[in-house]
Amino acid sequence: MSNIGNYDKQVKNFTWEISEKELEYKKGDVINIGEYCSDRICRLGKGDKLALIWQGHSGDVKKYTFDRMRVLTNTIAQYLVDKEIKPGERVCLFMDKIPELYFGFLGILKMGGICQPLFSAFGGESLFTRLEDAETTAVLTQKKHLGKIRKIVQDLPHLKHIIVVDDEGRKPLREKECSFSMEKEKGIEHFDIYPATAETPSVLHYTSGTTGKPKGALHVHYSLVSQYMTAKYVLDFQEEDIYWCTADPGWVTGTSYGIIGPWSNGITQCVLDAGFRVESWYRFIRDHGITVWYSAPTAIRSLMKDGTAAAKKFNLSSLRHLCSVGEPLNSEAVIWSTKAYGLTFHDTFWQTETGSMMISNYPGMKIKPGSMGKPFPAVSATVVDLKTHEPIEKPGIVGLIAIKPGWPSMFRTYWNNEEVYKSKFINGWYICGDRASIDEEGYFWFVGRDDDVINTGGHLVGPFEVESALIEHEAIAESAVVGKPDPVNMEVVKAFITLNPGYEPTDMLELKIMNFIRKKLSPLAMPQEIEFMDKLPKTRSGKIMRRMLKAKEWGEEIGDTSTLEDE
Ligand code: WT7
Image 1 (cartoon, rainbow, N blue to C red):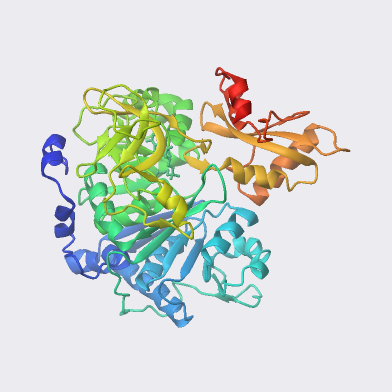
Image 2: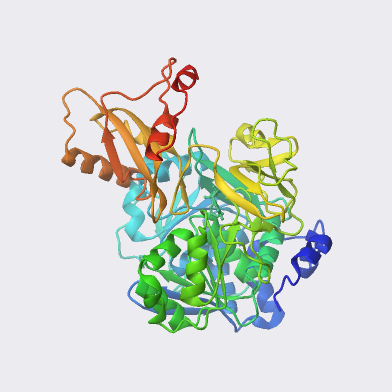
């Protein structure tokens, strides 16, 4: 029997108080996610249970019990306190998926800091924008990433501590830099955990929009009430499960369900700190006996490319429940997974801003391949009219996905940007910015985003960020960036550019520009294709018509360009 049992019954009966009760939390109590994920699990008698099974790219494995994790997270928390980092200050994690990243996350929360995880493949500019915006005080990083921080530190007056977690005092360090070895430090048995309450800020996740710089979605400790229960019901955690979330904690899936969800449920999880390779993924599942697997459509499509035979080569019989998030999970992938693993991927829909799953397919519920499923019990979701923002009553009509505010893990603001935050709420609904329709049985069907943000392999890339970075290249005069369809990554970044006088459109220049963006922003933001143009299509007021270029890439009708030109 699954944890959720009968979905329809849960819709009638479930309230967030049930989650609060299970967590033994009462309104006004202290609630610190760091405590809930380690100390509390030990108090419940599971101190000797494995919390983390970690595997590096060379195959080395490290294992940590909940009790060891409790001590190591205390040790990190104490170190930050000794550095005089204060509650409420932003502490960034800029590391690969090493154990220090996971324990650093809980350590920061334990001392009351606001944790700002950033993807370690980010280039200097992506890193700089986010550290500058958050006025981040400290960064925990690895020596291999130190170079990127050194290049920008002089322009970040708020950044006081650069803590290198894997250096062991070998590298000559500069001003503001210090070396800290979690495992070599004296373990701290008792740490005074910061008495956070429901609305105390916890995590700051940056996400890209159509315009402007990336925005920091701010979450609070009370988000646990959503994350704990959605993990329990949707990922269906059972005591003996060995769970694998493939997401990097630089993105929200990697924190909400790669840290908080499993550990607040006292579940053992595995982490693979290595890139994607079909065989190594299957070997990882087999070797560790993974039972619950949370991944993304791009990975699933990559596995599909190697066919069912590759899957059959390994004994994957430990798997019992599969979930997916980040992009539309096409029905072919759902049907394929049934053939390859004898199990169906359960699609889930949510966002950085929602902090936890909003619409999902639940164990035991009828799955309609291609549908995102139904709202989590106690989440009120609908689609609203594209213009009036009134709920659409009739099935099958496309509108904007809208959610009634009030679920515990809702973001509380965009850092330094209350105005944009407020603009997301219309007629009493939080508007996600995605288009969908709902069928007669209440299943949600994703249609597409309502803006120009590019979703590449489940990661959002803001076209404006890439356009701004492009024009910093000496050869480029103007740029427009759109998503181009891609069979595996759903979309990839494509750039249209015009050149400054004296530059020729050559293959060499194209490669140089690609590399320029990869280094400056990230491999995800790097255009996979650059088209040199004599001029870019513009409105009469001089705005570049990104939409027209996008329509061309998608083979869609461009429509009436005269109206476009008037925009
Ligand atoms: C956007 C949010 C929170 C998960 C990681 C992404 C798209 C997410 C689905 C899905 C179709 C999906 C939407 C959404 N998206 N899940 N199941 N089907 N699209 O978090 O980076 O904030 O991106 O990802 O466009 O708005 P994010």
